[in-house]
Length: 222
Image (cartoon, rainbow, N blue to C red; front, side, top):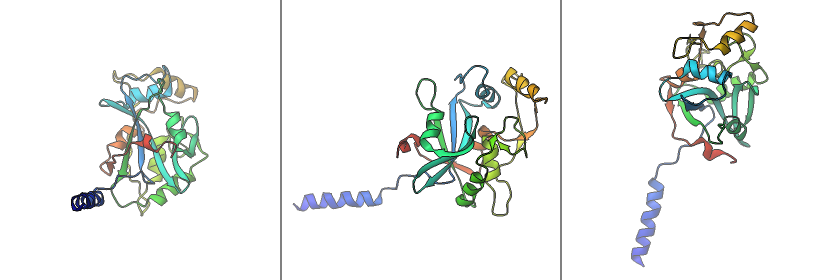
């Protein structure tokens, strides 16, 4: 009996000392990654973005903001389908489910310090209802995904946390995909190669972010 009690007590101590499992938090950024050779749909915007921003073994095509509320987990992001919108996590995961029914790779990253998540969430929600920024330009009452994050994540002094860099619209061969030349041509614009902007691939590499060991799909229907 004493031995059993000892083992039971040891087990309880082990549980008490075990580190808590990391949980998704409001303000976490969720990056959507697909293999470089994955074809979203020939001629689509997604394919053109992939061609322009692909780097390494995984192409990060989207970034979204987690909003963990008392009534569930929500996602705030900018997409062609919803514009700038706040919707349940399940909707987000469904929208990005791949053609074969599998999930892309969801990478969760968190700011190291110095930013209050509630203010970032409030900033992002203030843009809800805007349309998706089809021309990837600033100050046009529309946002694309990483532009929404940049405009929402500000320091206490109101400064941008994520810098801009010259946008690249060219594929690996140095050519601009036909999709972009046609799209901007319809808008009466030249492709804005080199104009300032952001993209999920570069944003994910920011030294301000640290990876969080979370399996996003564990939260579906919870």
